[in-house]
Length: 394
Image (cartoon, rainbow, N blue to C red; front, top):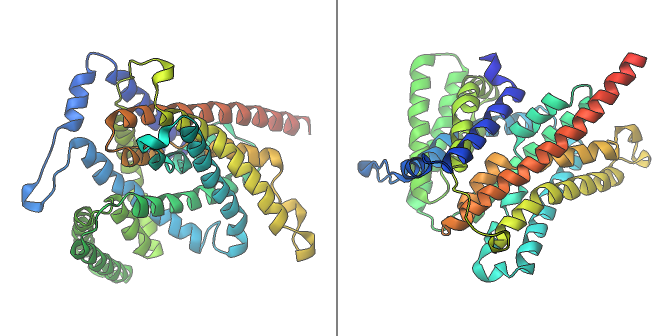
């Protein structure tokens, strides 16, 4: 299990799954796999009508968001974001890493006439950072770098995930079934109360089974409400007591890293490469392709640099040495351009009425994230080698 818990191994597995999906989609097996992804596994008695692809993105991916919410709660209460002073600079950098890519996307799409086709809805796609993948790349190529780089990246990515969750809940919800939504809220409250009882250590087995049942009911209610079903995982993760949440995340992490995320990456990357010329590609393709590596780099590094100079000042009793050097901020900016999982999900949601744009957007997310991965890996490897040489010379 320790192998699959590794950030490095999880990132490699995720990348391999996406590459495999893209390759197979463009072979003779492609039509079969695409038909299988679109095939429905409905449960009429429960009012559930989902394709296999949606069972993965709306169902299994809720497990990933449950773990994200547990980690988010920990970081906000006891971790790298447990005080305003710790959160403010990464928060400013996160805002820059969201606003600038969105503006770059809108600028590219607007300049190529994409607004007329409703492509502006895709502005959230390049705003996400895949925390697992970014930390995996850092762990693989960044040995010997200052620990502050990882802490800053983790804090920024956690806040980025929080904004991504809010975007999914607010911007990708068309109609609301209030009765189902109220039912989901009641279920979350019941789940929280059961978590408190579990905390006391009595009747653990029956309580855990009951919590699983309530969690599934919450997921069903959120699905019926019109809100994206992965938000159920977020709500459940946030109300779990700290210790129970940590245990839950520990138990589910191998399942998420080894099955959920690779399966989602494989499914999302099942895209037949469009047989069109470069000039015929959608403006959304170019907007995402530029905004992920370039927008994230500029937004995170510039906002982080500015935030440090506003917040960390000697006149306020702060130590200037607490500021990350610009080259560290640029490194974090490169890693922030790895959108991957959440960007792929947002791409599906933003362009769900335009399958061709979804396909091109998927390719753009993979290529844009790939550019960020390669650039970050090269920079990290060079910096890591330099650090090892200095350590050896000393």
